[in-house]
Image (tube, rainbow, N blue to C red; front, side, top):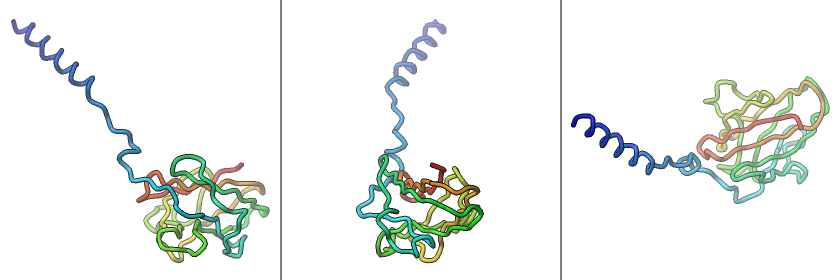
Length: 149
């Protein structure tokens, strides 16, 4: 009798567990689709919003811009911002980030999109084309990554 009761409980639990669905992580984190054009703005653009450094959407809440760095070993400084450096669209490094302002090739860094003075820096080891990405899938902690093209 005890064995039959145990089997019945296990069967009920198994049937119940197959009905449980875990939420998709994208349903939990607040993401952001941009409602304006964003630019890679830095010392190489004299901090202007130039069309060739405009971010393009490549996936839901993920945007990328291309840039050429021609001087290996030079520290390039930049932000990701709209045409007016508007609040909420003026992204530099987050002071809470342990690595600070320097980006490391292929490693995501947390951005603060309400910063006024904090900019990212990157020192390329070789000259060439790079991709700067900003990931808004978690709007409260957007991530910036730089990769070699």
